[in-house]
Length: 158
Image 1 (cartoon, rainbow, N blue to C red):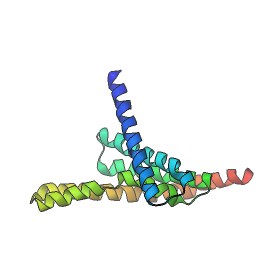
Image 2 (cartoon, rainbow, N blue to C red):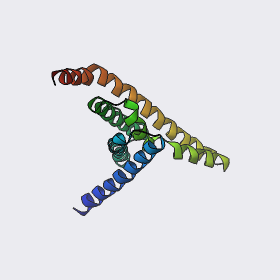
Image 3 (cartoon, rainbow, N blue to C red):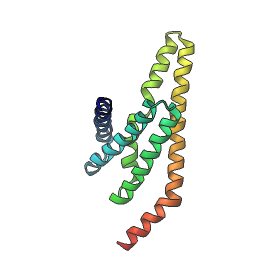
Image 4 (cartoon, one colour):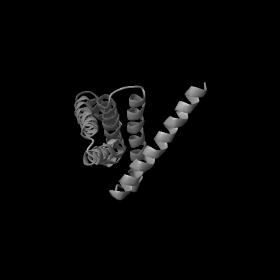
């Protein structure tokens, strides 16, 4: 019971700070104020998906793939539902997952002449970026073929 509670508290911690990160980036990018909360929730969902996969032993690639699938699908649904551009939700949501700090760490270790460690960190960054890109492509394809037509039919009835 304590293990489950501590895991849920850690998940809540990650959710709150990834929400703040997404909303902060959205404010910097001058996203419309009415989309800030939704974009923050999308970013938090994406990060929590990444963190859950990674903390349960999945690779960086699989974690990034699941994260980008969550981000892209929820962003597209919100874009249709609230009638805003997709990028208003997707770009701020992507910020917590982009491997910027990891790439910084890779360059830092490279400059400290730790070549094997630097190569390992660069590869993990590359795997994460490729996982994000593949997930976006898969989610967009799935959405255009399956989910998009269903949502359009439903919105035409209303």
